[in-house]
Length: 149
Image (cartoon, rainbow, N blue to C red; front, side, top):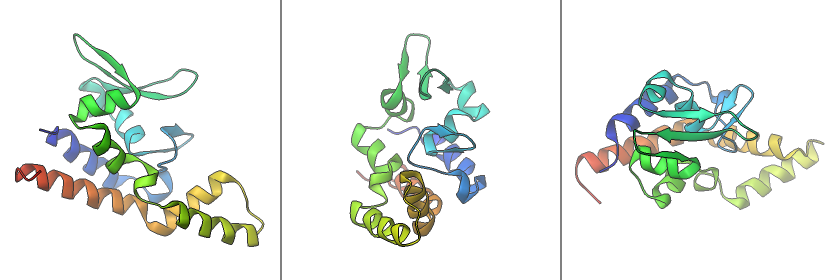
């Protein structure tokens, strides 16, 4: 059974995150972060053993008395979900298709903006990613609270 308490806390965090500070393309970059990045920097998650490890690349880590996991293994274990569920809930590809990215890229080319990051950022803003993620997380929690698989 997924860690419903953690999902509810994550929803609460995301509700207070401005759209401009959610970026599903990276764990953490400057003042923006993906869903997991925001969780890994939150004091409640940190107290539960889930945090961001600052090294050459920032990665989430989950530490228990007997385990130390990082990356997607940390996410899957902490939230008690599968790799497929992680991908469905937390990755950019689950919310924006390659076709949509290409359309936005074409728009940006016409405007003289070609940076990969600006294309991805605009795509997320146009799709209102933050709200889509919150809605998907709420549906996921509701489904598992009702015992529906």
